Length: 172
Image (spheres, rainbow, N blue to C red):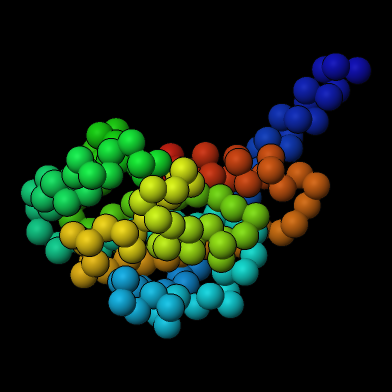
């Protein structure tokens, strides 16, 4: 009986890996802090799923760009304020030239509300988010929002967690 369950799980795992490898992000908009209300297609992201917020690079040497970005991103005022910092392991995955660098990849039952938190949350709130609008030193930066809708299901948390883990390893 246990062997049969294990075999069935192995088969499901293989199918699930095939499904995960087929996932592709859908673009929901390019934006900055002065135009996000208009440039994000908010109606598209009223769904559960995975989302990725990327930051536009200047197409120069990525290591130089990252060094300069870290100076803007990791300022003392934001430390210990429930905001993500850069991670050396993730940065090292993106050593070539690219137009956009993944900044945050997450999952949510409501991508719409979670993206709003990333943009609008106050720096003093305990919500873990990018808090982009509160960062006066990077208001001019261009971002890209992409998402993958996932169907509601009683297995949503399992599917979404596996998908997030897979995509993090792939993009982030």
